Each structure stands twice: as structure tokens, then as C-alpha cells.
Length: 298
Length: 220
Image (cartoon, rainbow over all chains, first blue to last red; front, side):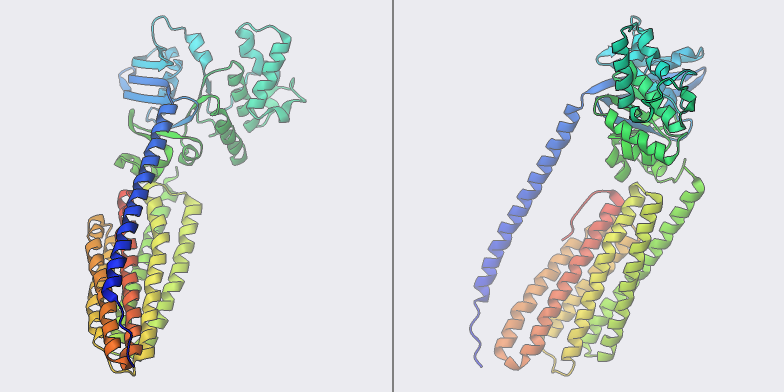
């Protein structure tokens, strides 16, 4: 049997040619992908202009130096989570953002919290107006011992709104924004404590929204709630972030991962890492972050 | 966070890693035995090795189940998440390594009665390199050693070159001696299996780098 002569060498040369072309294409594609990615990343960063800039923030309770040299930008219309072990200063930090610590006599602070370009700790700054712009929701639902309607309209009335149509509009809008309207619209004059825990917490969120804040601070808003109510609040946080800047302190890392776009990890009063949430939970940059989120300490 | 449950999780993760380590040992054994059966034309060893390879299927199944369970129950993050996802990925590579070994054993069964052809020596040399890659890739994974994993690309290039050589020389042999065609053609298949084995080992190396450092790197 005579084998037909195979032009092996020729084929080899041709194959080499093809593989060079393929390699080139592959490299091009990688470069393109990387370029695309970095543009996307940049866009995200630039689009999200900071709503609040924290500059060299230090805080003390008496001699206790509870927050140390914190520099952080909170992006507008997005959710930022602050995580960290108990006692690391999360709540204190959150309360610095709307001057809620001012009420403690042994509290001292240095540094700046800049809201839309203005330091809220400036001498001329008005605490009431700061707290109107930066609303707060607490760990335990704390409705006023009043009706649902009175809870929502408490703030607007204090701020001088008297027009009944306007007040009705605020009532409906706030309850709708807090995803509570459908559950309570036929009993607006019921006592707020008759609501379930999850409903009470949404009522508190609606109450915060009624004065049309720009930033909403949430301090462990779900820690007193069951999983169903928690899921509702988390959905609500996502909805709110389309319009408001939301900053949430949470013990629950899965919750931070679920609801936030950015996460700051605070440890003994210092920001250890501030990163896009998916990066922080997949490939954290700092060993301390890794140890904390994987439960190796804390 | 409950410290007690997390402890249980890390214990479970350690157990899981041990099971994967056990799987890597079996795979290494199967890969070696398959080539030995071919070179020694040992059908008994080939049959035994095919059977042993089935253990790998079962392990792959069990390990994947365990990974799903850990993901569902503990929602791991960071290095723990990367470890589990890496395991899910590399057990597929390990399974493919065992499958290719079974294919080599099949070739032993097809060709054990034939006169050996000279390409079998090349297969032996090629195998020496594949064995090193597989062994080092598995070592890098088990010992969390990304530096070791990074070194395997060069060895893989050598295997690729030998693969081309086996084809070229095989074609020559077949041209010169048509009676060798059946065996030689089968050996060319074996060289492809070996070349793929090296690729799968490189996948494991690349995944190891991701698991330890969080950075994606392709080894080839």
C-alpha cells in the first residue's frame, strides 16, 4: 500500500499562521474587555458623586477615642453599608453624620462631615435643618404613642405645613414609599402600636420620609424583625436607594451583601477597608476584613 | 454572628478539603496506572484502573453535594467562598483526568496483543512531563501554593511540543509500515489524551491561584 504523501511541513506552517492569528484575536479581545471594564468602573465612580464627604473625623466619649481619622465618601443615591464587630464605633459614626451625638455631654468631635459641599459642623450650621435633610431609622421601631396618621404628619406639622390636602398627600406618599400604604390605608387613625413589628419599622421609615430627607441613616433597622419583615425592609431599602442616599449599619453581613453597593468595614474606630460590596465579600484587600467576614474572629 | 456555627463550618470545610485531597490521590494513581498499563501492555491493570476510576465519579458527586450544602447553609464569603467555588470547578477537571485515564486503558485493551511501535517511547517521555504537571498542580492546590501553580505553564508548552512530535513521527511510521497503523493511530489518540490531561492540570493550577490570591490567571 502506498501512502499518499502528506504535506506535513506545509500544514504545520499554515497551522502556525492560524494560531498566531488566533492568539492575536484573543489578546485583542482581552484588551477590549479590560478597557470596557475599566470604563464601566470609572463611569460608576464618577456618576456617583459623593453626597457626604467625611474628612479626618475623630471622636471621643470622655477619654475614649472611639473614631480615628475617618475619611470616607458616601455616594449619592446608593446604599452604603457599615459593618464591623460590636463596639467598633459603627453607630457612633452613623450618628456623627446627622449630629445625633451632640446630645451627649461627654462627646467631642474633630473633623468635617460635608453634606453637598457644606460642613454640617460649621458654626453657622442649623442642627434642625441638618436632621431634616438627613433622616434616621433606629434599631427598634420607635413610633410615637399616637395614631398612624399623627406619626407621619408629626414632622411636616412641626415644619409648618398646615394645608390639609398637602398633608393628606404627604401621608399617602410617605406610606406608599415605605410600602405600608396597602396594609394600613383603611385604618390610618389606629394606634401605631397596634401594628406588627415589621409594620412599625416601616411606619418609622415612612415618618422619616415625610419630611423629605435626602439621606436616610439606618441603624440596624432589621435586628428586631423576623425574616419576612426583614425581606420587606430590604426590598424597601433597594427602592429607596433610587431616590435617596442610604447608609445602613448592620451586624448582619449577609444583609450588607444583599442590600448595599458599597461597604465600609470598621474595626476599633478605624476604617479598615472601603470597597464595592462584591469586591469586599469576594476578594477583600485587607487581611483583617477577610478574618472578620469569614468569621475567623469577631 | 454565632461563633459556634462558624466553627462547625470551618471544620466542615477542612473535612471537605480532605475529601478533595483524597480524590486527587486516587486521580493521580489512576493516571499513572493507565499509562503503565499501556506501556506494559497489562490488560489486568487496565481493567482494574477503569474500575478504580469509577470511584472518582462517586467522589465528584459527593463533593459537589457537600459544596452545595455549605453554600446554602453558611453563605460563605471571601477565601471560604473562593475555596468552595474552586473545589466545584476543579472536581470537574479531576473527573476529566480520570476519564482520560480510562480512555488510555481502553487503548491498552485494544492494542495489548500487537507488536509495540517506537512511538510508545515518546508516549513514555510525554507521560513523564504530564505526570509532573498533574502532581505539581495537585500539590499546589492542596498546599495553597500559587507560586508553584504559576510555574506549570512552561511544562505544558513542552507537552504540547511533544504532542506535535508524536503526530508527525506517527504519520511517518504509518507511511513506512502500514501494519503499524492500528497501534500508532491509537497512540496518537493517547498523546491527545495526555495533552488534554496537562491542560486540565493547568486549569487546576489557575484555579488554585484564584483561590489563594483572588486574582484570576490562566495557565497554559
